[in-house]
Image (cartoon, rainbow, N blue to C red; front, side, top):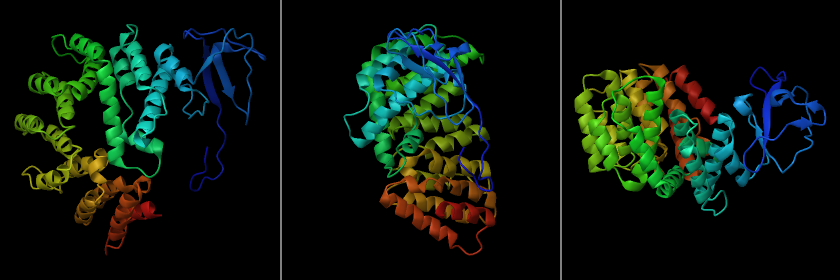
Length: 399
C-alpha cells in the first residue's frame, strides 16, 4: 500500500485470491498445482512474492482471478480481448464476469476517444452482451449492471490526462448507439417482457426488473428515439420509472424533454426532495444551453443559495454530473462555480468548500481547459477573507 501523509510505512496485508481456470468453452478445469491441491481455488498472497504453477492442464486456460471479489485490489493481468470475451460471456462467477465486461467496454471506449481501430471489436462485445441477456440463470438486477457502460467519469479516470470531456461524451454515446443497433430486437423483446403490467411492488425481484427495463430503455432510446421514454415518463406509476425516463429524455435538449421536465415540475412542485431532483436533471443536460439554464434557474422562486440542499442539487449537479458543460472549453462553467462558491463562502463555508471539491480533477483536462481551471482556482485563492474551509480545498488543488 502506498504511503500516505503521516503514515509512510504501511504494513503489508494478506491478499486472498480465489482463482479458477476456464477451458475454451468456459467450463472450469480441475485445479492441481505443483505444491499440491488448491483448496477452494484460494491462493493466499502473504509474502512479497509467490509463484503458483498449475499442472495437468488439458488445454490453454483463461484465468478467472479474484472471484467473488475475494480481495479489494487492482490486478494487472496480461489477458487479451478474446479471453475477456470468454469470461464476460461464460464465467460462472458474477464478479469476474462483470469485471471482464467493464474492462472490455472500457478498452473499446478508450480506443473510441483516441479515434483508434484497436481494442475489442464492437460486434464481439455485442455478442457477449447478448449472451448475458439471454442467460436465464442471471437475475435481471445483475444483467442491468453487467450491460451498463462505464460512466464518463470512469472513462476519464482510465485515460488519466489531457481529457476532452466532449470527446469522452461522444465516444460513450457512439458505443451505446452501436450496441443498441446490433441488439435492438433482443433488447426490445426483453424490455417489453419486463414492462408487463403488474402492480408496483418494492420487493427485490421487482426492483431488479425495473433496473433492467430502464437500462434497456437507455440503450433503445439511443437507437430508436425517445417515444418509449416519453410514454414511460407520462404513464409511470412509480418515481423510479418516471425519473429514469426523464433522465434519458434529458440526455438531449429537445422540445419533448422541456415538456416532460415542466410536467414533472408541476406534478411535484410541493415535494422539496423531488424538486431537488428536478433541479439536478436540468443541471445535468449535456448541452451548450445548460449553463444559461442554470443561471436562469438560480432565479427560480424555489431556489436559494441559503438552502444547502437546493444549492447542491443545482450547482453541485452541474459541476459534478455534467463534465461537458462544467469543463466547457471557454472556461464559463468553471467561472460559474467560482462565482457561486465566493458568494456562498461568507455564510456557509462548508457548502462552498464542498462545491469547490469539483475542481479536484482539474489537472486531468487538456491544456486549454486546464489553464482556465487554474485561473479560477487562483482567483478564488486570492480572495481576501476566504474561509479556512474553502482555502484548504483550493490550496490542495493548486498544490
